[in-house]
Image (cartoon, rainbow, N blue to C red):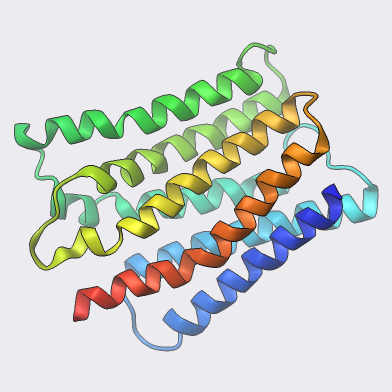
Length: 219
Protein backbone atom coordinates (compact mmCIF):
# COMPACT_ATOMS: atom_id res chain seq x y z
CA UNK A 1 0.00 0.00 0.00
CA UNK A 2 2.85 2.37 0.91
CA UNK A 3 4.66 1.69 -2.36
CA UNK A 4 1.69 2.26 -4.63
CA UNK A 5 0.49 5.33 -2.77
CA UNK A 6 3.97 6.83 -3.13
CA UNK A 7 3.87 5.94 -6.83
CA UNK A 8 0.51 7.71 -7.12
CA UNK A 9 2.01 10.79 -5.44
CA UNK A 10 4.90 10.74 -7.91
CA UNK A 11 2.47 10.55 -10.84
CA UNK A 12 0.28 13.36 -9.47
CA UNK A 13 3.33 15.58 -8.93
CA UNK A 14 4.52 14.81 -12.46
CA UNK A 15 1.09 15.71 -13.84
CA UNK A 16 1.17 19.01 -11.96
CA UNK A 17 4.67 19.79 -13.22
CA UNK A 18 3.81 18.81 -16.79
CA UNK A 19 0.70 20.98 -16.77
CA UNK A 20 2.77 23.88 -15.42
CA UNK A 21 5.33 23.47 -18.19
CA UNK A 22 2.57 23.41 -20.79
CA UNK A 23 0.80 26.49 -19.44
CA UNK A 24 3.69 28.75 -18.41
CA UNK A 25 6.82 27.74 -20.35
CA UNK A 26 5.47 27.78 -23.90
CA UNK A 27 5.41 31.58 -23.95
CA UNK A 28 6.74 34.41 -21.85
CA UNK A 29 5.35 34.41 -18.33
CA UNK A 30 6.27 36.00 -15.02
CA UNK A 31 9.42 34.71 -13.32
CA UNK A 32 7.30 34.26 -10.19
CA UNK A 33 5.23 31.60 -11.94
CA UNK A 34 8.18 29.80 -13.43
CA UNK A 35 9.95 29.54 -10.09
CA UNK A 36 6.90 27.91 -8.53
CA UNK A 37 6.61 25.44 -11.41
CA UNK A 38 10.29 24.56 -11.07
CA UNK A 39 9.62 24.00 -7.38
CA UNK A 40 6.92 21.48 -8.30
CA UNK A 41 9.45 19.88 -10.67
CA UNK A 42 11.94 19.51 -7.81
CA UNK A 43 9.26 17.79 -5.72
CA UNK A 44 8.57 15.45 -8.65
CA UNK A 45 12.24 14.46 -8.99
CA UNK A 46 12.51 13.82 -5.27
CA UNK A 47 9.43 11.59 -5.28
CA UNK A 48 10.63 9.80 -8.39
CA UNK A 49 13.91 8.91 -6.69
CA UNK A 50 12.08 7.65 -3.58
CA UNK A 51 9.66 5.58 -5.65
CA UNK A 52 12.41 3.94 -7.70
CA UNK A 53 14.47 3.23 -4.61
CA UNK A 54 11.48 1.70 -2.85
CA UNK A 55 10.57 -0.57 -5.77
CA UNK A 56 14.17 -1.61 -6.43
CA UNK A 57 15.47 -2.02 -2.87
CA UNK A 58 12.21 -2.62 -1.05
CA UNK A 59 12.91 0.23 1.39
CA UNK A 60 14.11 3.82 1.54
CA UNK A 61 17.64 4.56 2.66
CA UNK A 62 18.06 5.84 6.19
CA UNK A 63 19.87 9.11 6.65
CA UNK A 64 20.36 11.58 3.83
CA UNK A 65 19.33 10.57 0.32
CA UNK A 66 18.90 12.38 -2.97
CA UNK A 67 15.13 12.39 -2.64
CA UNK A 68 15.40 14.90 0.20
CA UNK A 69 17.00 17.38 -2.19
CA UNK A 70 13.75 17.36 -4.17
CA UNK A 71 11.72 18.52 -1.18
CA UNK A 72 14.40 21.00 -0.09
CA UNK A 73 14.63 22.38 -3.64
CA UNK A 74 10.87 22.74 -3.98
CA UNK A 75 10.53 24.83 -0.83
CA UNK A 76 13.59 26.88 -1.75
CA UNK A 77 11.88 27.86 -5.00
CA UNK A 78 8.58 28.59 -3.21
CA UNK A 79 10.49 30.73 -0.71
CA UNK A 80 12.47 32.59 -3.37
CA UNK A 81 9.32 33.30 -5.41
CA UNK A 82 7.68 35.09 -2.46
CA UNK A 83 10.82 36.64 -1.00
CA UNK A 84 12.05 39.94 -2.38
CA UNK A 85 10.02 41.66 -5.04
CA UNK A 86 6.68 39.98 -4.33
CA UNK A 87 6.97 40.57 -0.57
CA UNK A 88 8.17 44.16 -1.01
CA UNK A 89 4.98 44.93 -2.93
CA UNK A 90 2.86 44.30 0.17
CA UNK A 91 5.29 45.05 3.00
CA UNK A 92 7.43 48.18 3.00
CA UNK A 93 8.95 47.30 6.37
CA UNK A 94 6.99 49.92 8.26
CA UNK A 95 5.44 49.47 11.71
CA UNK A 96 1.90 49.22 10.35
CA UNK A 97 2.73 45.80 8.90
CA UNK A 98 4.53 44.56 12.02
CA UNK A 99 1.59 42.52 13.28
CA UNK A 100 1.39 40.65 9.98
CA UNK A 101 5.09 39.85 10.17
CA UNK A 102 4.52 38.53 13.68
CA UNK A 103 1.55 36.43 12.54
CA UNK A 104 3.70 35.05 9.73
CA UNK A 105 6.22 33.85 12.31
CA UNK A 106 3.63 31.40 13.64
CA UNK A 107 4.20 29.22 10.57
CA UNK A 108 7.97 28.66 10.94
CA UNK A 109 7.61 28.29 14.71
CA UNK A 110 5.02 25.54 14.25
CA UNK A 111 7.10 23.83 11.55
CA UNK A 112 10.18 23.72 13.79
CA UNK A 113 7.99 22.46 16.65
CA UNK A 114 6.76 19.62 14.47
CA UNK A 115 10.36 18.77 13.57
CA UNK A 116 11.21 18.62 17.27
CA UNK A 117 8.28 16.25 17.79
CA UNK A 118 9.62 14.01 15.01
CA UNK A 119 13.39 14.10 15.55
CA UNK A 120 14.39 16.81 17.99
CA UNK A 121 14.51 14.49 20.98
CA UNK A 122 16.24 11.55 19.29
CA UNK A 123 19.77 12.94 19.28
CA UNK A 124 21.99 13.80 16.33
CA UNK A 125 22.09 11.46 13.36
CA UNK A 126 22.47 11.76 9.62
CA UNK A 127 18.70 11.54 9.28
CA UNK A 128 17.90 14.16 11.92
CA UNK A 129 20.43 16.63 10.50
CA UNK A 130 19.21 16.19 6.91
CA UNK A 131 15.56 16.52 7.91
CA UNK A 132 16.50 19.48 10.09
CA UNK A 133 17.79 21.27 6.99
CA UNK A 134 14.60 20.32 5.13
CA UNK A 135 12.47 21.62 7.99
CA UNK A 136 14.41 24.90 8.11
CA UNK A 137 13.80 25.54 4.41
CA UNK A 138 10.14 24.54 4.80
CA UNK A 139 9.83 27.00 7.70
CA UNK A 140 11.29 29.82 5.61
CA UNK A 141 8.78 29.25 2.83
CA UNK A 142 5.88 28.78 5.26
CA UNK A 143 6.53 32.22 6.78
CA UNK A 144 5.74 33.99 3.52
CA UNK A 145 2.84 31.72 2.66
CA UNK A 146 1.11 32.57 5.94
CA UNK A 147 2.09 36.23 5.88
CA UNK A 148 0.69 36.69 2.37
CA UNK A 149 -2.53 34.99 3.45
CA UNK A 150 -3.27 37.55 6.17
CA UNK A 151 -1.60 40.77 5.01
CA UNK A 152 -3.88 43.43 3.46
CA UNK A 153 -4.12 43.40 -0.30
CA UNK A 154 -2.50 45.98 -2.55
CA UNK A 155 -3.64 47.79 -5.66
CA UNK A 156 -4.97 45.59 -8.48
CA UNK A 157 -5.55 42.71 -6.06
CA UNK A 158 -2.15 41.09 -6.66
CA UNK A 159 -1.97 39.29 -3.33
CA UNK A 160 -5.65 38.38 -3.05
CA UNK A 161 -5.41 36.66 -6.44
CA UNK A 162 -2.75 34.20 -5.23
CA UNK A 163 -3.99 33.61 -1.69
CA UNK A 164 -5.49 30.26 -2.68
CA UNK A 165 -2.06 29.21 -3.97
CA UNK A 166 -0.38 30.34 -0.75
CA UNK A 167 -2.96 28.39 1.26
CA UNK A 168 -2.27 25.22 -0.75
CA UNK A 169 1.49 25.71 -0.41
CA UNK A 170 1.13 26.15 3.36
CA UNK A 171 -1.00 23.00 3.57
CA UNK A 172 1.65 21.14 1.56
CA UNK A 173 4.33 22.31 3.99
CA UNK A 174 2.41 20.90 6.94
CA UNK A 175 1.69 17.67 5.06
CA UNK A 176 5.43 17.24 4.50
CA UNK A 177 5.95 17.74 8.24
CA UNK A 178 3.15 15.24 8.97
CA UNK A 179 4.93 12.76 6.69
CA UNK A 180 8.11 13.30 8.69
CA UNK A 181 6.32 12.65 11.99
CA UNK A 182 4.56 9.51 10.75
CA UNK A 183 7.78 8.03 9.36
CA UNK A 184 9.67 8.74 12.58
CA UNK A 185 7.13 6.98 14.77
CA UNK A 186 5.40 3.62 14.91
CA UNK A 187 2.08 4.89 13.58
CA UNK A 188 0.13 2.49 11.31
CA UNK A 189 0.87 2.49 7.58
CA UNK A 190 -2.60 3.84 6.90
CA UNK A 191 -1.48 7.17 8.43
CA UNK A 192 1.26 7.75 5.84
CA UNK A 193 -1.14 6.59 3.12
CA UNK A 194 -3.61 9.28 4.18
CA UNK A 195 -0.83 11.89 4.15
CA UNK A 196 0.23 10.80 0.65
CA UNK A 197 -3.36 10.90 -0.64
CA UNK A 198 -3.76 14.46 0.67
CA UNK A 199 -0.46 15.43 -0.95
CA UNK A 200 -1.73 13.97 -4.23
CA UNK A 201 -4.77 16.25 -4.06
CA UNK A 202 -2.62 19.30 -3.33
CA UNK A 203 -0.18 18.57 -6.14
CA UNK A 204 -2.99 18.14 -8.67
CA UNK A 205 -4.63 21.41 -7.57
CA UNK A 206 -1.44 23.43 -7.20
CA UNK A 207 -0.90 24.74 -10.72
CA UNK A 208 -4.58 25.13 -11.74
CA UNK A 209 -5.23 27.19 -8.59
CA UNK A 210 -2.13 29.29 -9.29
CA UNK A 211 -3.18 29.75 -12.91
CA UNK A 212 -6.67 30.86 -11.94
CA UNK A 213 -5.23 33.39 -9.52
CA UNK A 214 -2.71 34.79 -11.99
CA UNK A 215 -5.45 35.33 -14.58
CA UNK A 216 -6.98 37.85 -12.18
CA UNK A 217 -3.85 39.98 -12.54
CA UNK A 218 -4.77 40.74 -16.13
CA UNK A 219 -8.55 41.02 -15.81
